[in-house]
Amino acid sequence: MLGIIKRNFRDIKHDAFIMLLLYKSLVTSHLEYANSVWNPYHVQDIEALEKVQKRATKLISSLKHNSYEERLRILHLPTLKFRRIKGDMIEVYKILTGIYDSSVSPKLPLNR
Image 1 (cartoon, helix red, strand yellow):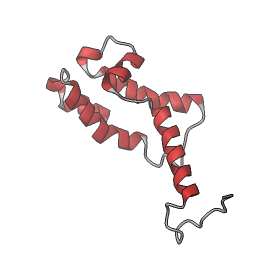
Image 2 (image 1 turned 90 degrees about the horizontal axis):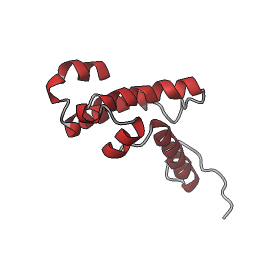
Image 3 (image 1 turned 30 degrees about the vertical axis):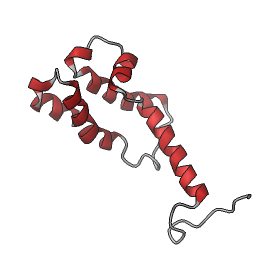
Image 4 (image 1 turned 135 degrees about the vertical axis):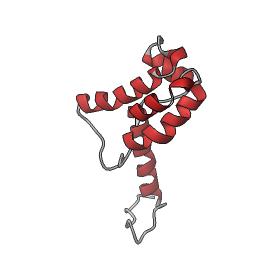
C-alpha cells in the first residue's frame, strides 16, 4: 500500500496533511490487523513493522531529513509499539469492566 501511495501521489509529497491522511487510511489498517490476537514480541518483527512507518514518514519531502522521532513528533504519530500496548490495555479494560456482551465473552469474576 505504501508503494501505491508513493507511485500514485508523487505530486503531493510536500503536503504533509494529505500524505498523513493517506497513510492513516490505507497503511495502518494493514499494520494493525488482528493486533489483539497477534502481537509481535521478537525484536526483528517489531522493527520490520516500525520500518514501514519510518518509510511512510520519509515520503513527506519537508520531513525527509529529520530523525524518525522528530518526524513522529511533528506529525503527532505514536510508534506502532505504543499503539499495540495502548490497544492491549483498552481490551483488558473492556474485559474487566464487562463492556463486551456476556453471551460472547463470559464475565470474569471480579474482586469488588
